[in-house]
Structures are given as C-alpha cells and as structure tokens.
Amino acid sequence: MNGKSKLPPATSSIDSSGPRLRLGLLGCGVVGRLHAQRLAADPRVELAVCCDPDRATAQRLRDEYAPRAAVETDLRRALADHDLRGAVICSPTLMHYEQCRLAFDLGLDVLCEKPLCGQRGEIVDLIARARSLKRLLVVSYQRRYKAPYVTARRELSQRADWYGPLRQVHVFVCERWQQTIQGTWRDDPRVGAGYFGDAGSHQIDVVDFITGQRPTSVLAVSDSRGSRVEIVTQAIARLSGGAGLAAHFVGDANHWREDIHFHCRDADLLLRSEKLFRAWQNQIEEIIDLQPHSSPDGAFVDAMIGGKPTSSPAEIALPMHDWTAAVLRSIAEGRWVECSAESQAAPLGR
Image (cartoon, rainbow, N blue to C red; front, side):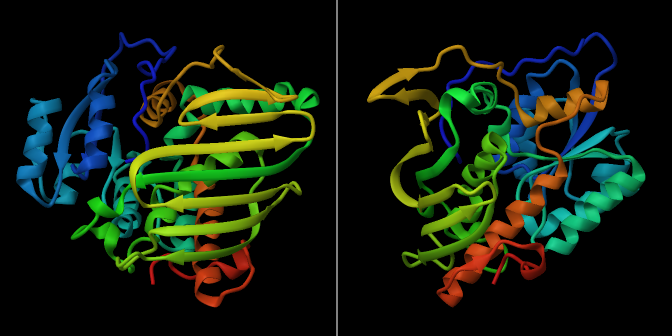
C-alpha cells in the first residue's frame, strides 16, 4: 500500500547454488502477495505452503506464484507438516503474537509484517523468546532496504560535517487508503491505529533509521473522516537528538506521495516520492549514486543462510509501538504525551 516504487530488483551477495529454503506464507491478501512476488523471484527460496483462512485466496496466490506449494487453512498444519525452515507472516496484527510463538516452538525463523504486535508486552516477550531459542525475528519495514533511504542514511552519516547538525524533520505522506479499507481489519479500532499507524509508521521508522533519532514526546490531532479509525493525523514531536519533527498523514487522498525532509544547519536532505536530493544555498541536486537495493525478504534469507545481520530486527518494533501509542493518547487527551516505555503499555487498538 505504500508507494509505487520503480526500483530495480533486490540484490544479494549470497550464493544460490545450495538447497533451497522452504518457507511458509501466512496470510495471502494484498501484503502477502507482495511478499510472494519477492520470494518467487529468489532462487534460494521455495515457497512450500500458502496458508489463509480463505482457501480460495490461498489457492489464487499459490497458482500465480508457487504452483507446487501446498494450500492450508489450518495454521498448525501449515507450519508443522511441510518441513519448513521459516515463516513469513502477513496476517492481521492481532494474530502475529500467537503465530510467531507457534513458529518459534516449531523451530522456525520468522519474518513478520508490521506492526509486530498490538501490545508492548507481546513484543518484549517475542524478542526474549527469539533470543532464548536462537531464532531470527525480522520485522518487514521495507524502506530500510530501499536504495534512496539507505543512501540518505549514508549521506547524513558519512557527510555529517557538510550538512551540519539536524534541526528539523518534516514528514508528509498521503494515499488513497480510506477508500480501500471498508470491511477489512484495518477499519477496526480494536486492531489498528488508522492510517498514521499503518502506512504512516514507515515514515517515522525511516526517520529513526536515517538519523538515529526517535520521538520522545508528541502532540497530535486527528480526523476519522467518517471511518472508525484515524484517517488524517497531524503531529509535532521532539526527537531524541534535539531536532523537531512535524508530520502530516492524509489517508483519504487520491494519489500517493511521500516527502521526508531533513533540515540541517548547512544543507538539507530531501526524500521526495523515493527520489533523493541534497539542497544548499537555494540549489537542489538529485543524488544518483545510490546504495544497492534490497528487501526484507532478501535480507531474511541472507540472515538464514549466511548469518548476515538485518536492518530491521525485532527491537525496532518497540519504539514504533511507543510512538503509535503516544499519538493515540495525545489525540484522546489533547496534550503532549511522552513516548516512553513506562507510559505506553496499553494495546494499540481502542
């Protein structure tokens, strides 16, 4: 749902000549289909089973991307009966905790869609279980692997003296989102946090990824636009390194656009719909020497085969939970709210 990228295929340095990894896909809807596309294109992977409560949905995805895969509607059979090495979880958020736990109990590594869980305690428990069982747990924040964002991180780290200290971050994202969620779990306030929590969390996560700064407190207002969840949300926040953040999430637009601007003392770094620019003294220059492009799926397989660290370990789910919970509290209470672990124990849904 988040942008129509024209980036090249993901790259990997891992040799594909060995036995293929057998993976299971849990959840065969829109997001599951995106993962299936990437997994089907990876010669190191065999998509061995497609699981969805709706058998017809799983069969359609199987027929298109993995004709030899099994189809299951029962979670335990899907994970236990097909000699899997790992699971890719694309189900609604409230199912993630039990599905991850079952996968760990069966000795599987996990790539899970975001948000990782609806409750902070569940995230903490999954991180501890993964460490104890020596299992991989990767969260699918795909912007951490896309070339413009990886390059932006390089710019603000390797050329930090040229840009100068970060002073302000501006985030704007819009999408035709409300028009697509009626009758789905995304329109259920017990499950999700609206547009800013679903699509918009990518932008706040990528600010953390690029700058190393996270929101410490937030003031937010929102409009449900007739839905049961937040559709248009505006927030201002203080970041951990001292910079300010202003964010605007518009979930009922008629097109997709994403702008993330990093305003530093001496120059600016601009992400505009996944193109990257540097700006100084009223000059703007596109940055074309981009870092290699990858994906959460490719990085998951890299880690399973070669032990390569991923850019989206489970630990990043905690600050995103705290940010989302703080925004919801600020909307409800009409005041500044701290983005701290101590104050964000409540579930994300309402």
